[in-house]
Length: 185
Image (cartoon, one colour):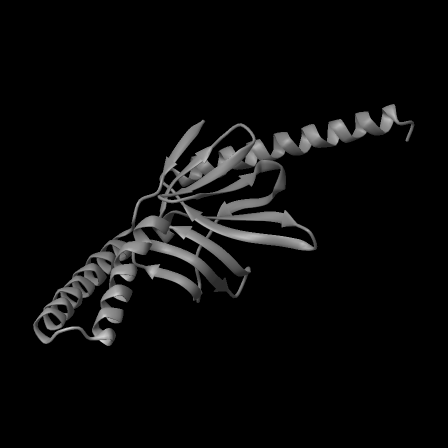
């Protein structure tokens, strides 16, 4: 098992700190107004939304990637995503160009969620720093699904994924050939 850490780039760090300060200040002010003026459902609702906005990215931001024997484990603070090497079609460097965020975070705690790119179409992002971004395309019924992840030592990560993918492809082809031979095909 090899662990690849995800680090926030300078853009994500600036956005995270700025958003945290602004939302915390707004939260404090709204709480003061609520406490001084009595109960108000609008202020209470905004306070709850601000709390969710401050806390939720912390639980969904990318933390690390584990390269296991047969799969990748994309870890978030809460939850993970598994990608099997045998399903991987492509693992290569990714350079964003005119990407559009459809749903998710555009820098607060990293870049994560659903994004769109003119070259690869829609993709799921779990990125701390786009300077270390890697595109992983996975075979699914009727096509492929794209993931963009980032990690330190991304060159080593790409090499490891491609080597494991190639080994799995050879093994599955050998197994299929052996099964066909045994079945008389």
